Length: 337
Image 1 (tube, rainbow, N blue to C red):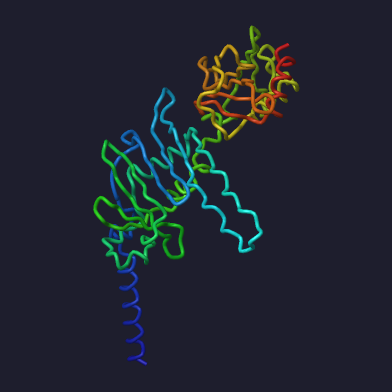
Image 2 (spheres, rainbow, N blue to C red):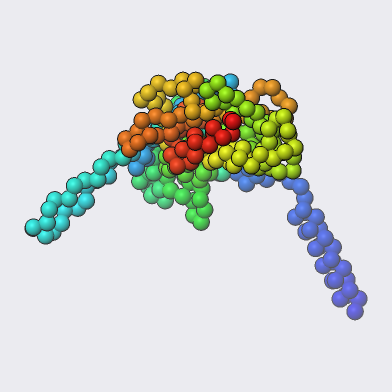
């Protein structure tokens, strides 16, 4: 029994030593421990990017005002090749599809996320230099597109390849030094589908529940509303802050629905703040300076009138659904009674 007990004791000691070694707090190599920096930079040093893909070209330029950074973005589309001719001799020739016109818009949150992912650019891991014979392995024989990023006046060029096995990250070759990296897939998705992923969707940068007071103006009339306590969507007159005004609350809900995705950089008719159908200023807490504003305009369109809004956050005018805008226009009179 003694030899058996001795072997058992030795086994326990060995297991303990193995456990302590396994749990020893030793730093992992950089490629396992975290992200690998491809190039440096920061949001203020970023100026522009351009991406040429198979179906889209994206150009994003940095702008700054009192609120901070925003990004003017242009997406153009490659012409779709005409359909193959029919084998039937009597069939009429098929017309090529109409080319999709380019779109221009403002990007704020999504643009900032993309820029911060590119300045600096940090890869999931470094692959190293890859010879031409291995291009197909990384999807670099038929790349998805070429990205050019300008930071501190220096241009960085990245060729996007295929996705990594079993994941959404993407291989990319840094043309400046010839090395291949695996970069986060979100970067490629934002560029490949820039027309749907990059436009700003929110009219304001603040959260709705942070607003405690609004000032409504139309022509020479003005009225202030305050949020009724314990009624998040309830609004009352500033003179009677505890009394809910259902008409005003319903109107404010409709104003909150004024959202669109079609940006208008320069309307055909010059618009001035005094020509707005209505203007709403938003205040947080007891502040005297507005956190933001919304102006609603009506302009002639191809099929009747179009409605545009302008806010502090979206910078440009944005076309909004006429059905909601008409209700806001009509009901404004009952709120500003």
